[in-house]
Image 1 (cartoon, rainbow, N blue to C red):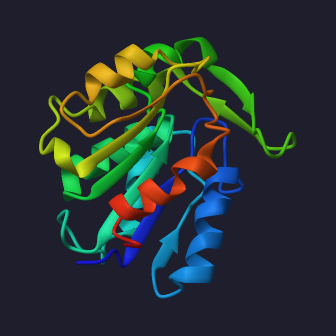
Image 2: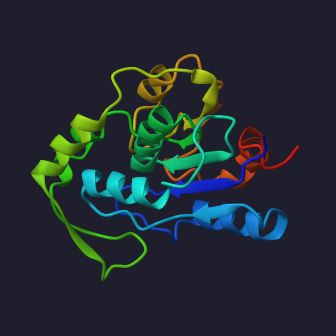
Amino acid sequence: MPTTHLLYLHGFRSSPRSSKAGRLQAWLAAHAPQVRWWCPQLPPSPRAALALLAEGTADWPDGADGGAAVVGSSLGGYYATVLAERRGWRAVLLNPAVDPARDLAAHVGVQTGYHDAGQRFEFEPGHLDELRAMSPPALTRMERYLPVIARGDEVLDWREMSARYAGAAQRLVAGGDHALSDFESHLPALLRFLRLCD
């Protein structure tokens, strides 16, 4: 079944103004305007973020063949994995965070947004506990995952990402960076995996 609903989840301090989200949205507008697209601004609280996503996708179909899919970048990739396990969706993961509670411990406090310096939010110690609490104990049905992992990621360890999604058809990028500046080159493969084109 082709994808009818597509969710994009941005990373920590990012926003729906992410260049990757914008590129996907532009492609859908030009080639698949019938697909329901949602890229919300995620709150700093992981629990609140998942509650927002549960409410916003309550009427979306479940299952890898149900027509819904999710794309997540960095912290959004962690959330996408949680949703894939809960809802059964196909998931594209762009340099996904594997242990964000550990990695974000150094970022507790007031943060500013990447795309809007005026956007300030508080990342609290309790948010780390929320991240730990939602971590899937194990990943299942690895064929529904497509991780895109840059060996040159300057933020996250590509080896850890690759090990976390062992068994999935991974796209390992020689070099690259955390932002996946070469995102355009991966778009055709991602669109095929998401069942948005042949």
